[in-house]
Image (cartoon, rainbow over all chains, first blue to last red):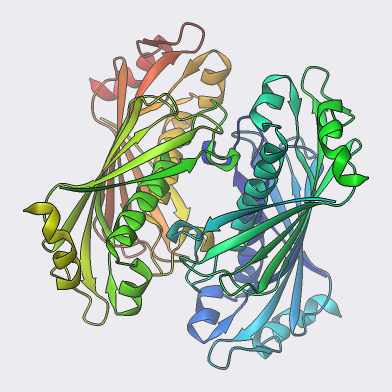
Length: 135
Length: 135
Length: 135
Length: 135
């Protein structure tokens, strides 16, 4: 398994009138989690995109356990539990300042060849970097 | 079953650099779908909230079939397939201008008594209005 | 002068924990105002963009007079007071359900030739359609 | 003068189909700038709010010099050039990875007594902490 931890401060822009982070804004935290997890492996999504490899989201499942509140510093734990194929599945566990797990997201993305518009396999470059974590 | 149709024009603010609506923004469309479905029944969420009944999201599942693109006028079909209990489950089917189903969301919310902070049953007022659709 | 009126329902996604629409979200209302004002003239921004004409924002001034609140149906009055040159200036006046002016925005955009990356004059096609309103 | 520097990584969620950060999203960067500038002084906005002092935005002026692009690590320089009275004015200068100034924002907020709903003077606690920077 490969995992990487990022952090995120909840902003006024994120919070609704219940004082909770709006349910749609967790998607941005998943994005931060997976992009930083890839960067930590040495893979920049912006480079992939410039090389014609897109990663659109195919499926997402979110579980809201407890609300995230304004100004809290959240911990984003992004996990890759399975070696990617044509799909890559990131599990995002979000904890609040007291270390309590408040949210779980599971996001499936596909690899898309921009030119042909076709689904493709996970680039070798990513597989090689993940290999050591799955031995 | 009860269902209600709303529409939504995809804005520049919604779209990412792939030219697709950003995956997190579908949550706003589910919100529009369910709030307008309730309004159509004669229930305004703002009144519920002022009466101390909150409806935080508990779970969400999203399936991205095809991308929504800039300036498309989407159709949001919000369905209630089961009579709500302490939970209410909205299924949102989104179609593009050509009538093609591009996205499905399934959102579970709970009823929360703001004062006590406790989960409560679906208010009678909503159940009464839904009754005719489930006979 | 040319002006066009659109409407916008304030969503939960828009509102912060003061119960006010978040100050950054008015930008989306200006966008709706100007895009619908152009559409009403027979100009679709998506077509312009496909023809290689971009309209990035150059300057914006916002005045927050009164807050917009959750679920209010706002009126967006988008005005063009000067014939556009290399710049186009939209004034957006937003009123709440009681008809009270709550917000004024003034947004300056430029016309950009995507290929050359250079500022260009307002396309003839827009000028022709605006002409009758400035006689 | 008091100033404080924060940083922000441009996310996919922030960028539009021109590949530029959407013009409305700079507001979030101003927010990060001023909240972190206050935190660096020892003032947490969340504490102020819990003590019944709100800071709604009254006016904003934005100048878009160059676009911010996906994945860029921006520098947010938040400046307080005048001692606050009933208003506080933050100037936000945003630079890109090459150190080029790409954006300037000027945001005026007021101090509001939540209970009375009235404008109030800047709390002593903030003035004391700012004093050394204005001597």
